[in-house]
Length: 352
Image (cartoon, rainbow, N blue to C red; front, side):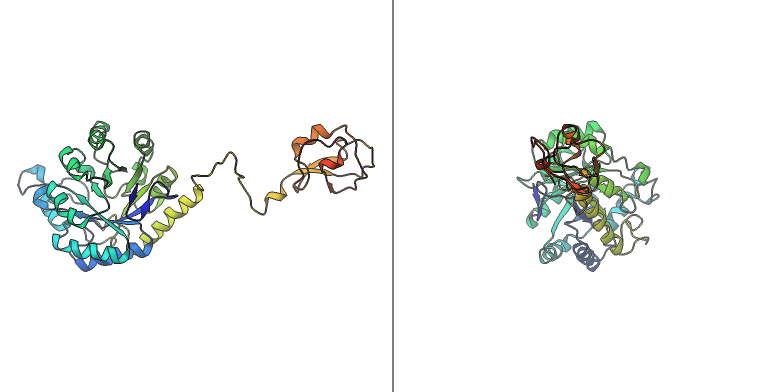
């Protein structure tokens, strides 16, 4: 499966997605600047939101239409989404800039109208936010032929995840573990749930709302194929996402941390059972069999004149018991790495 230039089947590390959700803060110039920063920092993909507020919620004064907890407590849903929404007229400009930057740009979609609108830009993927995972009509509409679907699981129960999976079926998809609190306490990141998802799905990643890079590095170690992180120009500012999004320098460090975590794992396609674990310059310093006392031709090898010591230029220590009691084929000075031709009858084994 590929999304833009990133081949998930061959990749040795997760795809890093820079999420520009509400952090444009109403400015097209800010949105473009964030795209440029993300690309320069090494992000593989950029995500935006194709959102029309009145298609997500409605402007009613009933209490359930007002947020009661979290960083946006006291705000009406419609007002929050109006502030977060990215104007439709920006999309051609953003997609043109993404082509210039040679980076994949894909949207979250929240309605069938969103799906129909973004089709003209031929995005390399579509995302279903966890709040929308319970909407099979939207999911079906987003399942374009061959276009990968990214589904976030943060708000969903296991039953709801299985129902969404039944809708997606064999369509190419990535399932993101997510905790929908902003920011997420690292102690509540619950990364083991990725293991549960991996039992069901081939491609599993993390939508990371924690502060810092620790959760992303641990998710990488657990086999995440995608890490999504919010980015902003004004971390800690007054914007909707500013309280948990990474600033430019922090995002660059975040990308580097994910890459380092992946590098520390080693190549995923290496056969560790047949490949050497360490081919560094220190490998010859391992133990091997050495003559530690002079041995005359015809004399027997004993524990007194042969020992397993460093470096590793002689026979492997596993041959020690086979050599004991056999006789030397020549005079052997002390300090000589023992080789098979020193031993009467030769035998198997290789000098290093």
